[in-house]
Image (cartoon, rainbow, N blue to C red; front, side):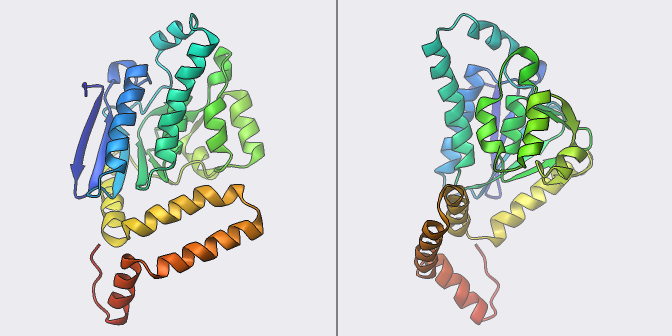
Length: 258
């Protein structure tokens, strides 16, 4: 792995740090590949409970790298589709991660960078952070992020932010429920660390993974199909080792240590 991406594990929390500050942490083909490799590794690491996505400097991610965009102009349709599938694989890897994913946004998160930030289960931003799906301003479309975005905000909000390409503040993103919390720049690192460690220490990794799997699966099901699925998963969870451990601790009034 190059210095485009920094990784560290502390207290069962994996930190994945975008490290291209001179390029505003823009997504190049190389960075997309490194993100995929790093997150895939942490997804499969039983010692990791939470993944934090952040940047080494204030810009979170400015979307696609300009030099990279220049190259795309000369790609064939087949080459562009293959390249788009690489980004889709990364987004899906984060979206379907069995780990709890937190994004820490302290500056601009634009276009694909906005999609990357808001894929997380929890997005925490500073008041100075800036969001926006700006693709239409350069004749491009926010095609991939649109699919994930529809599960977060209403259709009217999607029409506003995707069709205008406008940028908006962290406070507005919070009001539209695109992000989850706004914290001062002085406090955000410690707040995210505390949240990540609390999740790691007080929740069952098995249960978190299953709840996330169900949250992704249920929206595409009919109501009766979803209830059948939920009843089966409920029954299986009751027999799991983590559930037995949790019930025993509760009945015996013991402190539960995951």
